Image: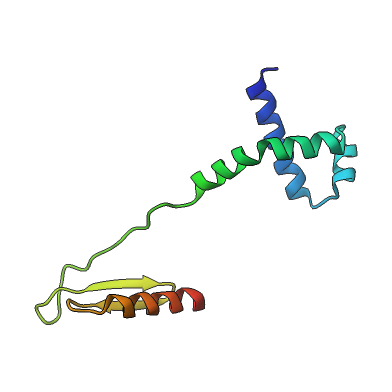
Length: 107
């Protein structure tokens, strides 16, 4: 077994252990490994697991602009959770940032 294959096997084992809800000793006994092996591989693979989690997290969110304007001036609708904020030209950026921060905490 190559090092990469061994890493993939242990990544799968660690995911299985974490999702099992079992204590380490119980899980290890059931799978024929020692707790020391499990802890070693969890520590060794920790950076790789964090990288995989970081890859899964979204980096961008879609922005949908409404081309129509009610009063002839352009505006932007910002949706945070179930709230919608209409931003018009000349808005106060610090006020918008405060409102978005509060809505994120509430939604």
